[in-house]
Amino acid sequence: MSLPGLDLGKLGARLGDGPLSAELVEGGRSNLTYVVTDGKQKWVVRRPPLGHVLPTAHDMSREYRVITALKDTAVPVPATYFLCDDTEVLGAPFYVMEHMPGVPYRSKDELGKLGPERTRAIALAMIDTLADLHAVDPPSVGLGDFGRPEGYLERQLRRWGKQLDASRSRDLPGIDRLHERLAARLPSSAEATVLHGDYRLDNTLVLDDRITAVLDWEMSTLGDPLADLGLTLAYASRETPDDSIISNVSGAPGYPSADEVIDHYARRTGRDVSNLDWYVAFSFFKLAVITEGIYYRFSQGKTVGHGFEMIGALVEPVVAQGNATLKEN
Image (tube, rainbow, N blue to C red; front, side):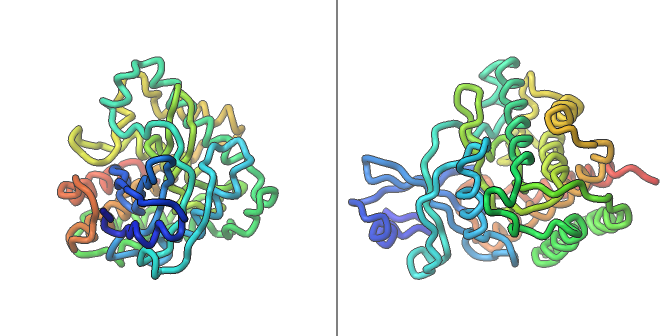
C-alpha cells in the first residue's frame, strides 16, 4: 500500500526489485522520509513535503550532493544511490540513500533511559561531529561552489525574513522587532565552512554512544560555522513542553550545559566564540519561521503524520527567547 507522497509501484520500477512496502519516518516535520523495503533490503527515500513549499527550500539535489560529497570524510553520512528529478514518479524530485543503523533521539525520556554518563557522551560526540564537519575543506570534496560565503549572514537574515512573509497568516508579536534588531548588529563572519543548517541530535543517528549518520541536509550550504553552533544551542535551550513533537533531549540528566558545549566546540576548533549571542538569537528567529511554516502547512491540511495540532503554540515562546538572548546595546 502506498503512502501519501510515495507511489510504490512507480518507485519499484526505479529500484528494479519485487513488491515494496514502506513506512513514514515520524519526527521529521519538513521533508518527508520513508523507509522502503522489498523484504530483503531497506532503502531510505527523501522527498519534499506536500502542499505549501517555501521558495528555495526542499532542494533534493543539494541534499543529495552534499551527502555524496562527504562520504570519504570524518563526517558519518549514508551512501547515496540515485537522485530522480522526474516528477512523474512521485510528484516531486526525490533521492534514495542507504538505511543506516542507529536511533534519532528526540525526547529527554528516550535519551534519559541511557543514564547521565551516556547522555553526556552522546551530546559531546554530536559536537565532535559538528567540529569534524567544520574542518572539511569544501573544494577538496567538490563543494567549493556549494554556496556564496561572502555576505552569508546578511543573506540568511534576508532569506528568513522572506520565508516568514511567505508563511504569514496571523500576528506574531515580537518577530519583526527581533528581525530588525538582528539586522542592526550583524557580526563579521568567520572563515566559511560546510554548514549543516539544522544541526541537532535528532538529525543524527546514534548507536553505541557514537554518531553513525548525520541526516536532513536540506539547509546545508557554505557559510559561517558559528551559525551551526548557534542553532544547536538554540535547540538545546528552547522552552519545549514535554508533550511537544519538537525535540527536548537537552532536558535529559547529564546533557551538557550551553557553556560546556561552547567550550568543547571551541577547544576542538580553536574558533572565537565570544559573539555567540547573536547567532543564538538569529537561530531562534530561524526556528520561529520554520515552525510557523509547518503550522501554515498544517492549517491548510497539507501535513503528513501526527502531532501537528500544537505546533502553532510553539512559535511565540521561541520569538520571545530570541529577543531575550539578543542583549541590548
